[in-house]
Length: 82
Figure 1 (cartoon, one colour):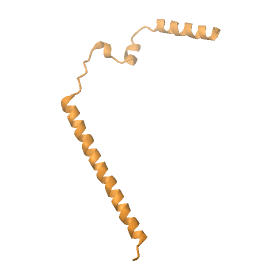
Figure 2 (figure 1 turned 180 degrees about the horizontal axis):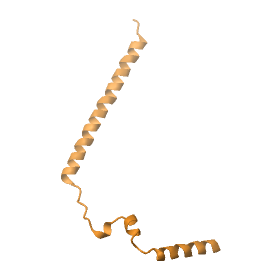
Figure 3 (figure 1 turned 90 degrees about the vertical axis):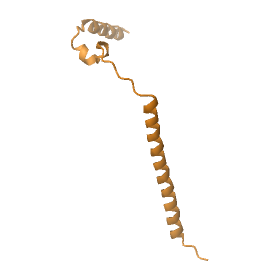
Figure 4 (figure 1 turned 90 degrees about the horizontal axis):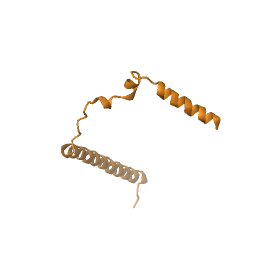
């Protein structure tokens, strides 16, 4: 009885690749199902647009930063003295 190792190797390769492919398909299905369930029972809360939620970069340009500059300068001066 002669066993062709190349054909046996190809059979195992196809079996292994098919198993991995089916597992990945199952995983994609389960993750999508989980996302739908989470969206149904835990919907995202709408963000309220209040004045305090404005980004700092926008509000920093409209404020006087002299106090912040003074604090940073004092911190640098104190660091250099040590």
